Amino acid sequence: MGTDFNQTSYELHEKHLSENLDKETLESWKRKDTVDYWRHENMYKSLLPFIQSYPDAKWLTVGDGRYGTDANYLLSNGVKHVTATDISDTLLIVAKADGFIDDYKAENAERLSFADNSYDFVLCKESYHHFPRPAIALYEMLRVAKNGVILIEPIDKNINFSNENFFVRSIRSLMNNIQLQIHGINKYDGFETIGNYIYTTSEREINKIALALNFKHTYFKHQNDYYIAGAEQEKLAIQGPLFKQISNKIKLYDFLSSIGLMQYGLLVSVVAKETFSEACQEKLKQSEYHKYTLPINPYV
Image (cartoon, rainbow, N blue to C red; front, side, top):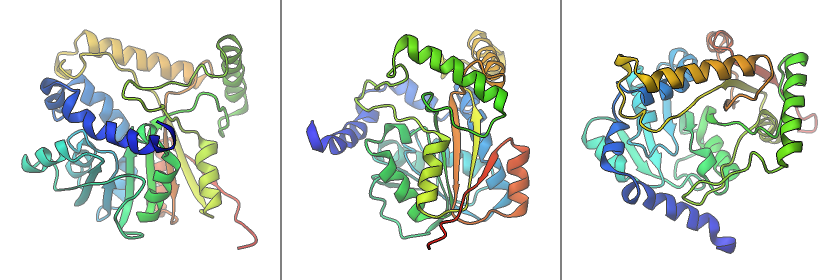
């Protein structure tokens, strides 16, 4: 595929939703009574400090091709204006017709058509790792955002840099290095069946991008998740076997992560282009985000 792989990758993703998923699975994505929705809602809750602190904010969602479910969550929680975007608008057209979302547009994340600072917040949830050139997409999201960009993505387990306490960080680093020595440096590298490399994120990488653009603050939150096939069909209300397996696994992962015996699975990264309001910062603190105050470039 050579130097044109980035274009090939986007074309593969554009075809994926309409050709490779069964209708039952597609329809399940819009339901809010399933175990799978409960999983995603646990991730979405990290957005509440921004939703509550900026009730009139305009939002853009990137890589939101699952019927615009990210946009729908925002709308369902009081956000007044959200534009859902994805490389393919196949399911977004249906979501709009069903009243599931208000606005949508087919967009390539590397070449967003919107003007600078045209949205208050840009959200990219579990799509950044699909992009062939994620950094370009992040620069584009930062360009069109006025207040900040929020990523919810798999964490890079090859990188241990964070501001956790010394003991937890040391234990986690030791355990991780043992794993890497046993399995090799590529232990945590992987590819999805559609062909893309699973591009994971880290605090250090996001901070470097923020530093390069002379932004003052970043915020991070760690989470865990677990998926079992069939969660899309099991109803949450019955507290069935899949819910018990998934919830117990997440609780175990949370405990092991908290004492440093394993890495968290997900990282919520926030690059602030403007200083957030005091009310927002307090809500972020209560929601267990940790804040970096980045050094200012003295030559600019």
